[in-house]
Length: 410
Image 1 (cartoon, one colour):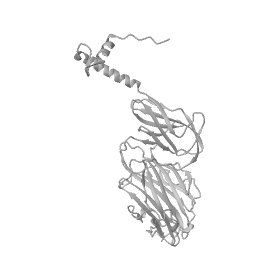
Image 2 (tube, rainbow, N blue to C red):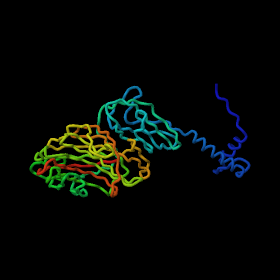
Image 3 (cartoon, rainbow, N blue to C red):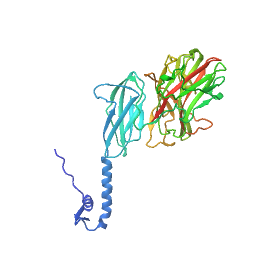
Image 4 (cartoon, one colour):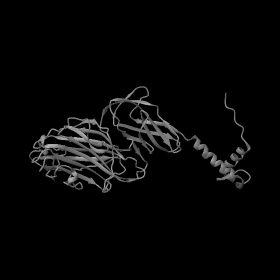
């Protein structure tokens, strides 16, 4: 049965009478006894229209562009999982949440969604995405099923910032840190000449330009450690939470595996947050003595080296190796929360997520969570990388060559 028209009250008629303009001679003229008499009903009319508009506001659709999900079958994906989506509303879209198995794994406050979410491989999970608009109304996608079948290195978005040629001598300054705080019983590192005609044969370096870094430790004690670092204080990328660190390295045949205690590779960022400047140290190393990859992680209330479950890790010497790390800043709950504008007050990503590690094209899942620290004395905002050589004996020389180092952040 068709809906019957509702009776219009006198008050409603008066509001409609005063709110409808009449066009006469190119001018808008209001019907009714006088504009003064219509002022109050006119204001009520405007408020009524606005209230009606708010009541009708709704998120009409959420469209997922990545991954290509199916409502009828489980979709095979790789980790980190790339989620991209848009939504439609008669108001502004103000944010998204990605839910995996009912848990929040990513949140932003933007008109669109573009996220890389680190999830463990080898399992089937449920996925749903919810979008909000400026009225607080929201809409969720259906719940989909995904099967994480592999691990890959993420592809940075076109808006990402790339710091290239980190390994070049003119790319700011490389510093040799031989302070006792580096560790070891003594500290005797130095920088050598990169372009060599003998072992190592740098003629096969990845970019053939004859420029890079050459790290040397000539040990005077059993555990002689030295740190070599580069940092960029001019553009610390404080508003970025995703980092892809890429480099090539070479250990010459003259460096005996038995002479090495560890080769360390670290990426770091310092960000000003609500309670001070936080240091995010994404530390990793190949422990030659145990032949295990280790990460700088919490253990019994302190940060220390913890086995990552990846072995063996000793590299073949006399050959160039390609390393790529993907790491993230995340909240202490383990998910990223991206504000509309980054500031010390809005940035809640105070923890570290180790995502993936690729060595010579083989990518492994890391997935570990750590926490940032507030150093004393305080740091200034900065971004950088460091490599450390640790000897396993006195009177030995260990070396490492570095080429084509870059860091991409977004």
